Image (cartoon, rainbow, N blue to C red; front, side, top):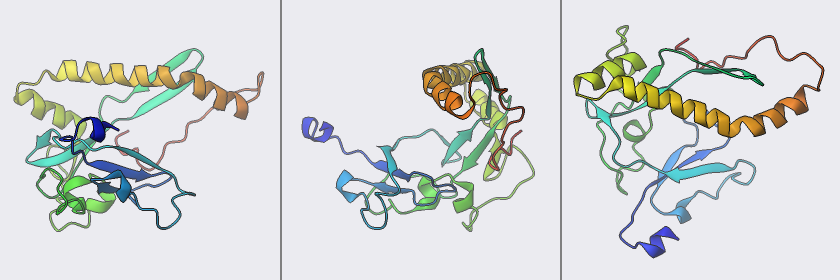
Length: 198
C-alpha cells in the first residue's frame, strides 16, 4: 500500500522466521512478493519488518545491542535491567542493501553464530574491541563522539518499561493460565544461553 502511495519508496525488508534462533532462516528482500513460500512457511510463520537501511555504524560496521531485563513480578510490576549488555558486530563493512548484496549475511546480520564463521571475525578478551563488545564500551564510544550517553541510557530504560507495560495485560493472561489463583508462583527464573552479560 505504501509503495502504491509513494512510488519512490523502495524499502528493504528483513524476514525472521518464528521459532528461529542464531540467525536461522533470516533473510532480506526488496519486494514482499519475494517472501519464500517454499518449505513450511505455513507451519513456521515469520515476522517481516522494514530493515533500517541507514543504521548507526561503529568502525563502518553494523551492530546490535542486547540488554538483559528481568521481569520479577507482574503484580506489583517489578522490572530489573542489567547495567551492562552486549553488542554484536557484523564482520563486513556495511553498505546499504541492494539486490547484489542482500545475501551478504556478514554485512547485514549481527548474529554471533553466523559471523563467527567469517574470516574477519575478531576474538578479543577486551570488552572494547572485537566482534563482540560490552554495551558500556559502545556507550563510551558514543560519548566520545558527542552523544549524550546518559540520556540514551535513560531513553532505553524508558523504552523497556513502556514495552513491558504494554505487554503486561497479555503476560498476566498467560501467567494466570499457567499458575492458578491462590497457588504460589515460580521461585526461580529461566535464563537462556544468550544471557552472557549477566
